[in-house]
Image (cartoon, rainbow, N blue to C red; front, side):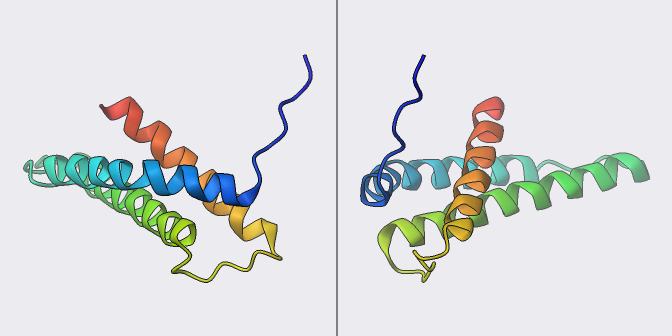
Length: 102
């Protein structure tokens, strides 16, 4: 089966502008719900709880950065596709993790 042609950057930006605000709100809501639960008393559980909080915040931060790029408010050099690809990969990972939690 032939591979589909990837969208051009403007199509990608438009799609992200439409979907990311909801995803960011979901990530923050999930973080808030998790972070307000008391961490376990044992050191291993406590560390895992804090690591999970940091991971959720990192995902939300990546989504916000990607949203800023999609809006054109954060400078990501269009001549450097590695930055864009990295942001997209991070956002996909965050979305997959968030979908697993919902």
